[in-house]
Length: 202
Image (cartoon, rainbow, N blue to C red):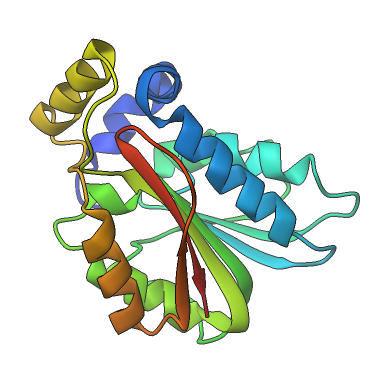
C-alpha cells in the first residue's frame, strides 16, 4: 500500500495557495529561477522536473521551446501528477531522495519549492547531481530563512511552518550542501524576500 502523502490531500487547492505565496513572498525568486532555466533550455534537452506539483512551471517552460523537450515530471504525489495529464511528458511517481534514474540521465534538472519539504535536503541534492550529466545544470528555488518583506510574507511563513508543508532553508548552508554533493560551482541568483534561487553547475 502506498504511504500517505499530504500533497494528495491538497492537490486541488495547491494552485491557489501557491499563487498567494508567489504574490507576497516568492515571486521574485520564481522569476529568477524561470529566467535561468529558460536561458539553459535547448531543443531536445533532456529535462527532469523534480517535485513538479501540478505542472505550472513545466507548462511555462515548454512555451519557450519551439520543439518538444524530452521532459520527465516526477512527484511523490499521484494526485499532483494527475494534474499534469495535459503536459507532453513522461510522468513518474517517486521520491527526490532516491531518484529512479541512471547516472548522467539528464542535461537539466529543475526543482521548484520541493527541497524545503524535506527534513534534510542533502540526499536529494546528491541525487540531483548524480542524475545530471557533467556539464549540465540543476536549477532550484526554495523557501529561504531571510527577513520577511511584509506582514503578508511573515504570515505566509508562519502558516507554511505550522502546517508542516516546509521549512525555511539557509542560503549559505544550501551552497555548502550542494558543493559537498558534487556540484562544480553554485551560482546564487539575485532575489530578495523569503525565497532563494540557485544554479548548480555540474
